[in-house]
Image 1 (tube, rainbow, N blue to C red):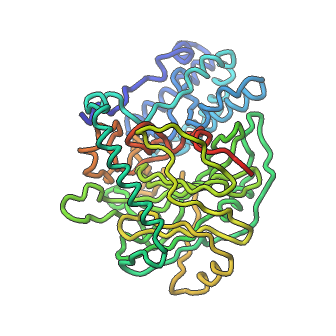
Image 2: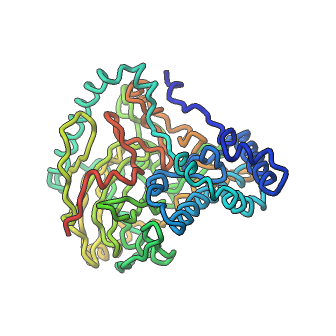
Image 3: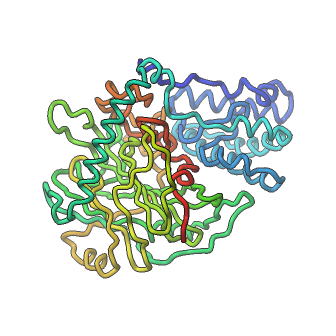
Length: 473
């Protein structure tokens, strides 16, 4: 039954215009065959990067959910060029890890990508229609699992979990139990400068320079307060052991970062994502379905055009436990009553002023988020001054985990071609499959986080925040 979750393999070279390009006896044909050969090597070695899928008929381009949502905005020639450029960049990013992981170097791909894009300029309509991202839910699994009935039981479970989370966030923070000792982690590089107003490209996407992005990532990086009871509570850097299994180096605390975007009220807003990895979620009893190797906490900050926070939200790297923490600058939209998992707000967070920072309280073992606090710079400085309580962590581009060094030679990604981290499976997958999520509980790559068992919801859906919130000031 779990096999039903696998997506049917679609050959992106078996559709027009690429199918015709392969038969051409010119530079376009050469480039088409060069890409096809590169992809055969990548797939034969199992090193496909799953973050953004190749586009059927245009396999030298890739698409993510944000780019797919932008397709309708690409009307003028400048907008169409900007949109195509985004798709080309996504393919470059994917191949920049696939080829080294395959120990292959093909210098001509960059030139060929531009040549093929120029040859397909007239095929913009077919490209728009083909630039889709599959949902991370299996209709076949839901059908076999009698989803219309099973969802009733799961909806009751979700409601119970939400009540438990609300009780934790309602309790005084000093009343939260501590199993070990409270350990504080702070970003090594800090700044309290905002940037902006941000310029926009032809599609209305905010343009951030590397300097601006680094400043915003440092500005909004959270302070962590973790109940540390054992090594599994220590955040660290992903690495590979001698058997190529993904492990966590506790000696090198890291927050893996990325830039994303969302749409609210027709305007595109930047989002900063921070992911903290732990070596495991330990077993709590013989029937613990949620325990297993590796665990990750993801913290996201949605910004306005000047780099100030509007909304915070969080999940675990399996796509589980999606929580929202809006500031007073947004209001939740009225939503219809439904069994589907929807907007869940366990706590409001006041806007963070200059010289303030967000502090996250994290539970031992489960790594559940228990509280979001706003602290002043004086509090942060006092924490950092105490060497016994403050441990600095580095900010590092999340894409680096797609090229981890092997103990011998070469590199490989932490994620498989299916977007999952091998070895991080959970026993819950044997019981939760009727909800249509393949290997529920397993750690996942960006673009593969289904965050609702009941209904459908993706963490990287750029339209999600527009469904949930409106900006009020």
